[in-house]
Length: 72
Image 1 (cartoon, rainbow, N blue to C red):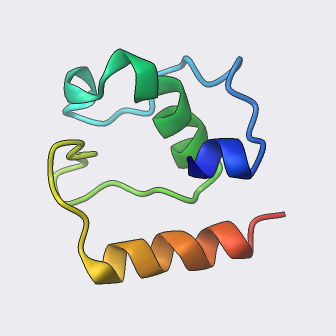
Image 2 (image 1 turned 90 degrees about the vertical axis):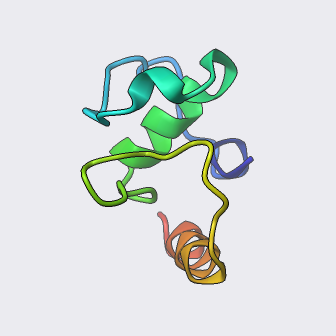
């Protein structure tokens, strides 16, 4: 949702971002996850993991919102 709201280009986001658990990211979300990581809005968790199956904490969501609001 954030990638679409920020109108991030998804066509060039197919390159891997280097997440160690990239195979766990669903196919429908991988381009958006890569675009958000490439834009510096999403960062990895410990061990360079994206952790797509983990629940997000309130702090993580707050950081995501603040980075999205300040994205040019």
